[in-house]
Amino acid sequence: MNINKYINLIETELLPNIDLSVFSPFDPIVVDNRSDSWKTIGCGNYAGVFMHEAYPEVVVKVYGRNQEELTEETEVYKKLGTHESFSKLYGYGENYLILKKLEGITLFNALIKGVQIPKRVMEDIDRGLEYARSVDLNPFDVHGKNVVMFEGRGYIVDVSDFYKQGYCRKWDDLKKAYHKIYHPFLYKYHPPIPFPLVDAIRKGYRIYRRVKRKLEK
Image (cartoon, rainbow, N blue to C red):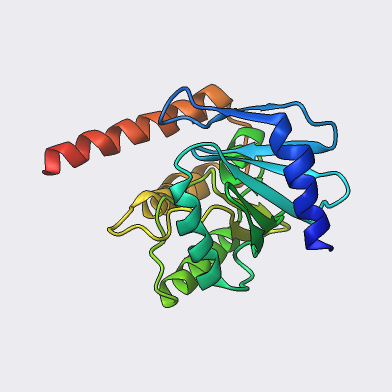
């Protein structure tokens, strides 16, 4: 891939034709994409992710808020280097990162669509998080919307908070729910679960964690 040509496409075709709006600090940003050649493939609390039709093997993550976090995420990817559990950083600009595209379905969407989540996926993600710790990173904010599975293997697609300090229990809580509820009761005959129900569980968990933190202070 010609990285300079790709950067030129970002600067001339993508950035002038997208708007990233913020309506709630707890929900993903909203993307308005007016480009003909760039496809929106995802959005999170900080950024939108885009892919050019001629370069399906890479994506661009464009920050819509908290752009100072981009510097931190860049350093995280530099520490991670090349590892099978994570994407790879190819380059970056003032408000974007160029990353290797990871294929797969998020665990969140797998629940909704009734796609089985094997134990090996959970184990792969655990190994990836252990590797991150071994290079002095702190896996933070790892949950069902930022880990994916592809052909029975697990990958971590969002490492933007791995520089933060403290203990984040989201992944441990998700694993607990997987082993105590999902695998014994849902895995074998995994029915699709309606989005409103899965999303309500997600929002309820966030409220529960916020209330518990306040009570623990």
